Length: 573
Image (cartoon, rainbow, N blue to C red; front, side, top):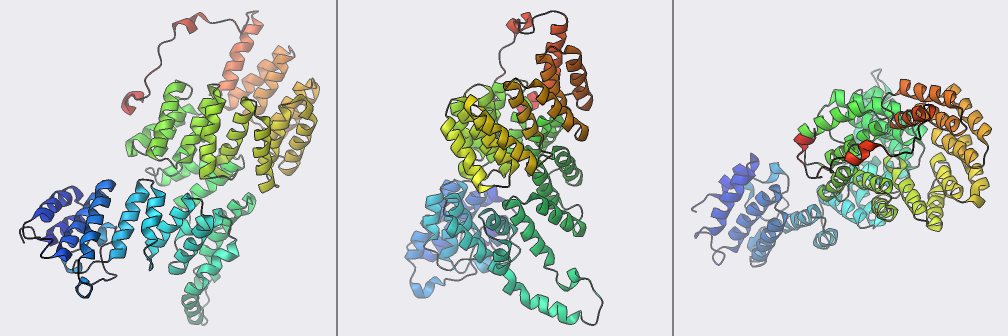
C-alpha cells in the first residue's frame, strides 16, 4: 500500500486531525486501494477519513464520507465482513491503531453519521439514522435521549436516560435530564440500584469488623443525595435543594459543579448576593470555566456592578471568544453603552448555539426596552420551547414572555401564560406575582392583583419583587401612605438598594424632595453603580434647582453614531 493506514490512525490518536485529513485523502485515492478489488479495505479507509473530518467539525463532509463507507460495506460478502463491536468510535482514543481496523462495525458508523447530524442540529435525520441501530452502546443511548428530548418526545427521552443509568449509574447528565422531565428521585435511583447492589453488599460485608462511616459503607450514598437535590430543584423545592447541595459540598468541598448548581438555585429564589459570591468562588477555584458564566454576568448587571462585569467579560474573551456564553456576557456588558451592539451580540450567541437559552433571554429583554414587544415575545417563546418551566434561568423566560404580551396589549395571552405557570407551581411566589402583574395592568383587575401580591408575600416574605409591585399598586390607587409604610417596613429587615430607590420615587412623586434625596443617597451608598438611583438623583437635583427634568439636554443632539455590532472584541474592551 502506498500510504500505510496505521499512520493515519497514529495521527488521529495524537489529535493531529488536519494532517490525518490530508493523509486520508492520499489513502483514499491510492491506486492500491481499489474498491473493486477490496470494498472492505476501501470502507476502512473512508471511515478513517470520516473520523478526521468529524474532529475537524466538517460534519457535512464527514456524513458524505461515512455514507460512502457504508455503501462499500454493503458490497462485502457477509462471511468476510467481520462485523465486530470493537470498531471505530467517535472519541479520539478510539480512532484506532492499525490492529483494530481489521473489522467494521456498521452500527458505529451509523452512530457517527447521527452524531454529525446532531452537531448540525438536524434532529430528525439523526433519529432516522439511529433507528436502524438495534444494539446501542452507552454513548448511543445518551445521544438518543438528547435527540428525543430536543424533538419533544419526552417519554422516549426518559426511557433512554434510564437505560443510560442501567449501563452506568454515574451519567450525571441523565440524572439531571430525568429530574427535569419530571421523574421522581425514587424512580431515578431504582434505575441504577441493581447495578450498584453487588459492590455495595461486598463493601458492607468487608466492613463489619471495622468501624467505618455510613458513606464508607455505602459509597453511592452521595449519588442518591445528588439525585434528590436535582429532583428538589426540578420540583421547585429550593430550600431542600440548597440543604442537599450543602451536604454534598461538605463531602466534596470546592466542587465547581456543586457550587455552580447552588449559585443557580440561589439566583432563582432571589438570593442574588449569595449567588454572586458563589460564582466568584467558582472562578477562584477554576478561573477558566465558562459554564453558566453568562448567568453570572446577568446577575452582575442586575446589581449594576459594571466593574466586575467588565473584568468578567475580559476574562471570558481570553478563554474562548467563540462560545455562546461569551457573546451573552458581551451583550449584557454593552446594554447600557449601546443597545444596538448589545442586541447584535445576543443574536450572535444564538447563531453560535441555537439551544442556548440565555441568548434568547437577553435578546428578548433588549427588544422590550426598545419598545418592540412583538419581537421580544418571539424571542421569549423560542426560549420557552427549549425549556418551559418558570425556574429556568432565574425565571426570566416566562416573566419576559408575560410582560411582552402585556406590552402590546395581549392581556388574555399574558394571563393564560401566567396562570399556566401558577398551576404548574402553586407554591411559587414568582408565579403568583406574575398573575398579579397581569391583573394590575387593568383598572378592573387591581383588587385581584393586590390579593396575588399579598399571597406571594405570605408564601415568601422576603420576596422584594412582590413587595415593590404591591407598593406600585398602592401608588396607582392613590394610596401613597400605604406604599411608604410597606416599603419602610421591609427596609427594617432588608437593607436593599431597590427599596430605597422605590421609596425615593414615591417621595419625589409626592413632592417630598428632601426625603427622596436621602433615599437615593442611601441606595448609592449600598451600590454606587445603581443606574436607577443615579438617574433618579440627577432628575431630583434638577427639580430642586427649579429645572424641568424632562427638558431635552443639548448634549443629546450631539450623540455619535452607534458603533457597529461586529466590532472586534479586543477593540470593545
